[in-house]
Amino acid sequence: MRILIVEDSTTVSKILQHYIVQEIGCEVDTAADLTSAIALLDKHSYFVVVADLVLPDAQHGEIVKLVRSAYQTPCIALTGQFNEELRTELLTMGIVDYILKENRYSYQYVAKLIARLYRNKDVKVLIAEQSVISRKFVKLLLEQHLFQVIEVEDGAEALTVLAEQKDIRLLITDYDMPNLNGADLVIKLREEYEREDLAIIGLASDASLSARFIKNGANDFLQKPFVHEEFHCRINNTLDAQDMMKMLWEKANRDFLTKVFTRRYFFSHYQDEHEEQGCFSLALLDIDFFKKVNDTHGHDVGDEVLMVFASRLTEAFGHKFTVARFGGEEFVVAFKGLDIEKTITLMEAFRQHNEQKSVKTSAGELIVTFSCGLAAFGDELIDDVLIRADEALYEAKQQGRNRIVMH
Ligand SMILES: Nc1nc2c(ncn2[C@@H]2O[C@H](COP(=O)(O)OP(=O)(O)OP(=O)(O)O)[C@@H](O)[C@H]2O)c(=O)[nH]1
Image 1 (tube, protein in one colour):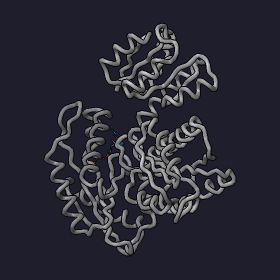
Image 2 (cartoon, protein in one colour; image 1 turned 135 degrees about the vertical axis):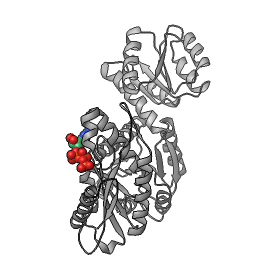
Image 3 (tube, helix red, strand yellow; image 1 turned 180 degrees about the horizontal axis):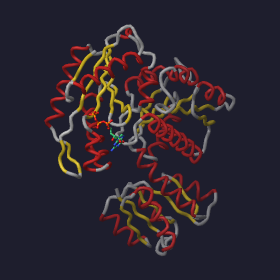
C-alpha cells in the first residue's frame, strides 16, 4: 500500500508522513506542487491521496479534481480555511473527507482515517431502506469510504441476507419498510447477533424513534436528513467501538502466547454441558518433559514450542472443536458431537503426526511429544469429566508418556 501527500509546507508534510507511517507503516511519497504530484500519480498506484487545496502551481483545489477524475483515487483534502461554499464544493467532488489544518490532532486524525479506510475494504455493510433514492445516497457515501455495500429494500429481506452472509459487520436500517419495520428488525436480530458481531445503526426522519432503536439493541441512530460528515463520524465511531469490543473479547478469551482459547473461555462456554447434549468427550494434553526444554534451551525456546504445539492443535482440531490452553504446557480439546471411538482415532493420528514432525525453534529442531487423557461425558457435569480426563492423563504419564489413555 502506498500513500501520496501533496503539500507545499515541508513541516506539515513531515508531520503527516510521521503519523501515517506510525499508524499504518506503509510507503508514503510526498510532492510539494501539482506538477510533481502528477509525475508521481503517473508512476504509482496510490491507496489514497492527501492533498492541500492550495498549492504553488494550483491554488483552487485542482489537485483534488484531478485525483478524483483522472486517477479515480480516494482523496482527503487539507485546507487552511473553511466556509460553507467550500464544504459543498468538496463534498460534490466525492472526497473521503476534508481536514482543517489546525493542530497536531488534525494530522493524527488523517492517519487514523487512512487506517480506518484500509480496514473498511474488508467490511461488508448492509443497507435496508425502501426508498431507492435514500438507499443509493447511503451507498454512495459508504463507497466513498471503500466499504463493500449490499442493499435490500425490506426488513424480511435483510434477515435473509444476514442469515446467508455471516460476514456482514454493519447494518444500516431505515424505520419505514414493508414486511418488517427497522425497530422490529433490530429486536429479531439481537436474539441472534451480539453487538461485536453485527453493529446496527437506525435511520428515521422522526427523532422520537431514536430511543426505540437504541432500546431494541441498535448501536446508534441517525435522524434523516443527515449531513455527510455526521454520517461518516457515526459509522466510524460505531466500527471503532466494535473493533474495541472485539479486541477486549480476544484479550479476555484468547491466550496471549498461543492464541488458542483461555481456560476462562472454556469454562464459560462449557460449564453447563452435560450428556443430554449428545456425544461429547474432552481431551487433556500435556507436553512431555517440558521443564527440560526450558532448562536446556531457555524460557523463550519453551515459548516457541508452546506456540508451535498450539498451532498444530488448532490446525488439526480448531476448525470443528474448541482448543484451549489450560495453563503452562497443558491444553484441552472439547470434542463436542464426536463419539469416543472417533475421538480416539483422531487424537491417535494427531499423536503420531506430532511425534514424527520436529518443532523448528531458534535452538534447532526438537522432537516434542505429549501425553493425553480422554474422558467422555457420562451423567455428570464438566468438572467431573475433567477430573476423569486428568486421572487418565496422569496414567498416561505413569505408563511412559507419549500415549493416550481413556477413562
Ligand atoms: N516457556 C514457558 N514455560 C512455561 C510456561 N508456563 C509454564 N511453564 C513451565 O512448564 C514446566 C512444566 O513442568 P512440569 O510440570 O514439571 O512438567 P514436565 O517437565 O512437562 O514433565 P511431565 O509433565 O511430567 O512430562 C515448568 O518448568 C514451568 O515453568 C510458559 O508460558 N512458557
